[in-house]
Image 1 (tube, rainbow, N blue to C red):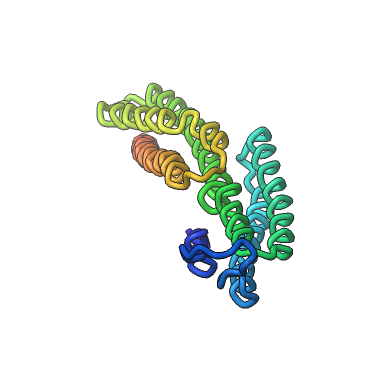
Image 2: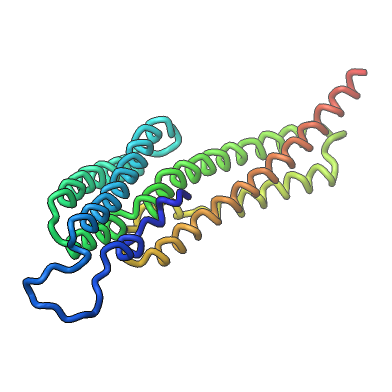
Length: 240
């Protein structure tokens, strides 16, 4: 995750923080001095620019994710399009601000209202990963059935060891399917907001399930290869 993710109001606040001194209502604070205000606006503007660049890259990548179903693709496209429009408008708003308080509020909105790094980036990439895994699991079910059929027709290969491998393959596929069941919908249902920790935890739950399922798929593939190799060996032996 980019360090830019951590561009937060804390960083902006260090520039534009106002002391606790009681000042007349019409008095300008140090944070509203031209230099400080310009620096604060530049910080928030750069944060918005970076987010727009990231969204642009995501928009370019999405069409290449062929495994993403139309419904999810439509949701992601809408989210990114809306964020680009809103952040572009926010960038113009920052340029016209005249007080530190207004810039600080814009910086808060930049983070809380869009959550580009914490939420949108993983929504795009994890949705793709989950759909790739779903497709792989479906293929492995067919592989299992095909291998089971071949074993049944090859007494020499139809051993307890190969049956155990097929059972292990089936268990791994079922485990992976259970892990990611509904995770894509749960991920896309997440909305930006001020609680960044909660969003991070929710995304981590999905990414963890995807990682574990990837391991299940690797295990199932390894089992399938062993059974396939055993079938090849018996076929070679029968021809010799």
